[in-house]
Length: 325
Ligand code: NAD
Image 1 (cartoon, rainbow, N blue to C red):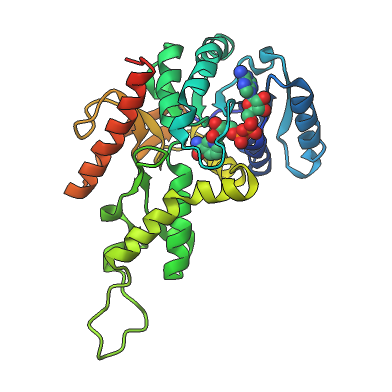
Image 2 (cartoon, rainbow, N blue to C red; image 1 turned 30 degrees about the horizontal axis):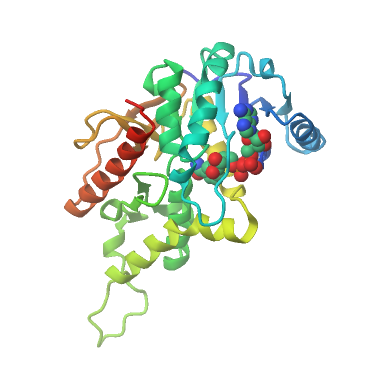
């Protein structure tokens, strides 16, 4: 594997998420060429035009696309954002049947036009749709994965960085499991710089106080809740989440097209990972030009193992109702 020269990125679905991802990818120069596709012809053509009008200011990347799927031919990476979005109060799992149906039709057509691409699913429920897309594609599991909890982990890191007053780049903490209600932070492995988060102490300790730890169990619980409900709050206020997922998606695209070997909590098919098989969900994984080259065996506390199993069981139950083996 090596970094891909003159890389071509196809984005399927030119809604709030697809266009934000395209915008982020152009600004970050994640790919040399960005192609947008949507069944809504006037919408996708207008979005392409609007994005293209800004490319004087985005370096060498270019953008094109429309309602003709042939435009994605030969793409190195295909990101799928097409589908119904989450409505206020709706859980991600509620959208399963509709979006799996869309992927059942789309995947063979995409694979036919971009047979060597790495495919990333953003459409929700991300883990269910990833599993289904892999099933419909006939591709090796390394080449079809979901954006998973990369966005959720970014939300967690943002909260922690503000709480402890350090740069977000120095907070190493992941949300894992389902990209949805059963996700959870891997607190046992969270670090700030070189320090385990549980050992991070207050910087205003009075000599009389024994209470040196910055985080109590109650605060861990409050931060977990904050991350898990973040999408609901954004959707209640503006109808969609788009900017942060656009940036997260562009970041993952770079890991593939630049053959980085970056460790990211993306969603991929697990086979006997800490006792879990036959579901796609997020654990720290190595992402390079071939897709997910490996998942990393992370030590879990007993409580985390239980939460992980619960997340996997929740997803497997939904896959069973959709008759996905
Ligand atoms: P949106 O309604 O704005 O856009 C969806 C687009 O998909 C529309 O333009 C529609 O025309 C298009 N579409 C539908 N069927 C299609 C098909 N067969 N082929 C091509 N295009 C098709 O929705 P959105 O806000 O952009 O959200 C898109 C998806 O991304 C939703 O499922 C949403 O829940 C999900 N999402 C995922 C994450 C994540 O972290 N994984 C974050 C935010 C949103």
